[in-house]
Length: 335
Ligand code: SAM
Ligand code: SF4
Image (tube, rainbow, N blue to C red; front, side, top):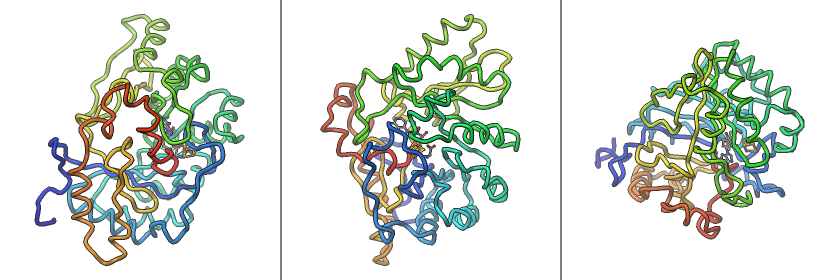
């Protein structure tokens, strides 16, 4: 612990016990809402954290109270040294989980089990093969679909992330919910969020309220169960009676959950982001490489965290491109 006791508590009383680490800026898909059409300039390899640096930075967070680490990217599984990263992080007293597009996850079943990575979030924005190709600019629908079934069969806890975009996949909301009839997965509908280069505008977003209108039109009231949300949960959880799985809505845009936020994000090039929506970053990697303690830098970043959505506390502010266009593309933040 540092001298100033809880370096992960901010000025709004929020304790940050959850760290999301992006392992790479690279990806084997090209989702249109995540990556600008002409790609992103990649950091030179020497600017990215090595596995030893990831471990050292993660350990500092765990020593200061982090209890959950989620690995993300880009696509975390395309990083060649993922086995050693998992091995090192699994030695820390922390719950380890991963967010993946699942294109190649079948090759990692044993290793994920070996290091107790039981909670897997998978992205799948359409159940229609041609629409999947349109949104990801790649042909991997069958691999992803079959790998979701495989993960469930192998006993992993699987959540499927669906970014909803008006006119693209809102007509699949009910199909996705019906997918949970026999499959024990959580479908998480995510409101489309603005990031650098993703051509966001409010009219493309399907809100929490709109999702619920689809649900209420498709199912009788007594069939729709509101589930208890876990503490710090970013989603509102529901279930259709007698279905094996459930569904949830992540409403970062229309109904932000900033009051209970316990998350910090570390980018693949070692920058700490105190909020998904904040364009400010704190350089942990340079500090570490200079042989200095990263704790004061972490504390300063945490204390600078604003109350709501990196300062975009109203929908009006969120719609001002100049406020969110300085932020990175999602692919280089890690979701
Ligand atoms: N490649 C992995 C994957 O796709 O799951 C991990 C990284 S990805 C950046 C993490 C999550 O961010 C995915 O579920 C993705 O759908 C979500 N995401 C990316 N861009 C988004 C946006 N503009 N709005 C909402 N969610 C977004
Ligand atoms: Fe890759 Fe995930 Fe972004 Fe899609 S959402 S481009 S899979 S990082």
